[in-house]
Length: 175
Image 1: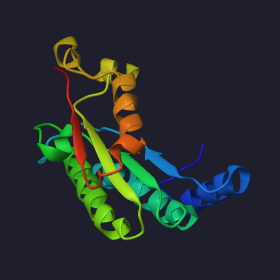
Image 2 (image 1 turned 120 degrees about the vertical axis):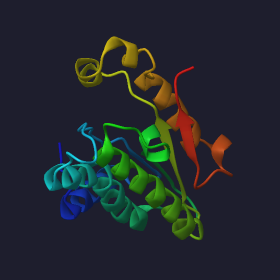
Image 3 (image 1 turned 45 degrees about the horizontal axis):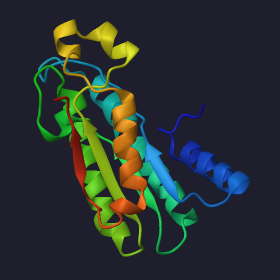
Image 4 (image 1 turned 180 degrees about the vertical axis):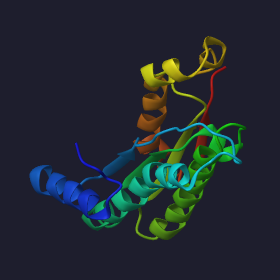
């Protein structure tokens, strides 16, 4: 395990992968965390944590992987979240960090498109995980999305079928 909130650690991780198995063609960033709290009670520490975990690795891993990707190819997919597109009460720092990730994804799509690298994100509503089941009541979890469903969306985004797609933020909400 590596702390990819630290740029040098992210670079070392990607360099190691490239040395061991060859240049990466795909980066999928699923790193994220949620600390609930409304805007008036959010502390500087919570805001920094949400930005460090939900935004930092996306940038640091992208900076590390792009030099290894072959010119004219490569796909990067980040996992954002519905609150990054539609702010939600009770999760101010999380919403802000995911909104920043959405904008970073779109900025990277513009900047890296000239190099043939596609950058997209999937934005789940709420993932059905053990941690989320412990944090949220059953009625909230009824609207959650299975991690396998998000994996299917990511698989599409990295596939040739999605070749014309870059800069997209695909919502992945329950029915």
